[in-house]
Image (cartoon, rainbow over all chains, first blue to last red; front, side, top):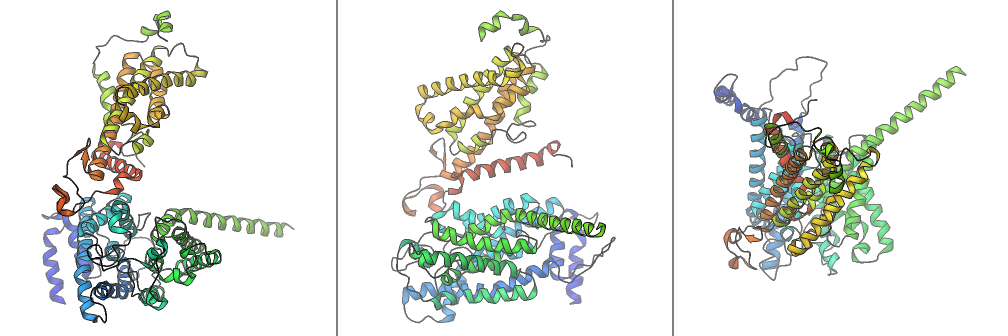
Length: 387
Length: 237
């Protein structure tokens, strides 16, 4: 590995202080720190250093995303080949078909996003942050498979520019950038992002292929011919990465075990959605409402959203009590939008974005309540002393 | 109102110093609001109408002209009577002046460009609530002569109009592929084969541009660009 180190040092030389390309130093530093742990030393003040820096955190999330991504690639091919050819579908065949569709999306997403991040790093003179490693992978995973690549690129550009850089870069965004990218595409190109024709590849060209999600079928009053087991394993149409609840659970376990994702938010979301679902099961006014509450947890993007999007440490609530409230409200709003807004059969994206906006407010009141409680305790103890 | 002004001609000229009509100071009254003191991007006034009527260029342009007429004329009128308005009821007097002018503008629009007037609907009437109008009356016309007030009104309305037109330009071009109703980017047919221009390459109109939030985002981007070019606008911490 010594060879690589000397090679990078050689490469870095023209970027040093006072050298020719000093301005572009952040770009080469990003490459360096991507491969090696940086060697800076904290210069003053009390400090604790930990091997788990932002980069490790982000890589952990990427690893947690992999099961869902691999299954998503397979499922993309499977849904298409199953409907076109019928019968059995070989794993490799389906996987390769899916890969051909999804790999370009991932490349475009990373390419556009990293280009903007690097440009801003150079322009503003700060280092490139790693936050985009996760965002860049999340964006393709929450898009329908047939979306044109330039729309993916434009959505990513919007999310990084308006959602992140305008607020000051990584760690300053109030909204989850990946969800913002999806929301942008959703409102800008609704015909590519919603409806019954987009969730299986080529469904808009071939009449025999139906590209309807389960929530879409329920909303339009069609019959659902997938078993609960299919929905849990994920052999259903939907956005690329969100269909398999099983793979998402594996990811959730990785996030919880490493402490990267907050279990309070995930559990809160689960409780919120389950209770809301149960409540409307009792009412059961239409197909969506009488769809069993546990079904609502495993279809659509709920599982993916609550595990990978809601737990984004930047845009979520920070206090422990706040995380519970935040999670429960996301579950609640997700179901409310699904059940009561016929235009949006899926509500988890809007639910999370809405709560992103309210997260600081939740934190504020949690902290205020804590201060009040402690003030009261102080006064009580003072009274005790004087008595 | 003009009668009152005639009755008290002294007030008209008392505070005026002799200076050429387009002195440097007077020119600054018009040019400042275009950039350094822009009513929308710097003072952040009149945002609501900027969101509502900027889907297409034509209504935005008409709105900008309507606001210009109202601001400039009300500035002149209030400036003429500024020394005889009792201070405690000045807001009501200003409102009467502005309301009269808004109704005039509304009637002119209805008479000469009915289609645009229908598109603008209530927003012409709502010019009266546009903060820029009252803001300029309070901040400028009450303390300055009619000529200066007129220039100030023209300048501020132009600053408002420029932003309106920039926002409407992007929203109409990207949202419906048109400018002033003309298809700039080609024609979008039902299928790809029937389309021409960019649409034949698979380009799609951006539906988000037609929604009001996008106007807010574009105004935000304009503010961002303006401030990074014009460093003195950045507040000191």
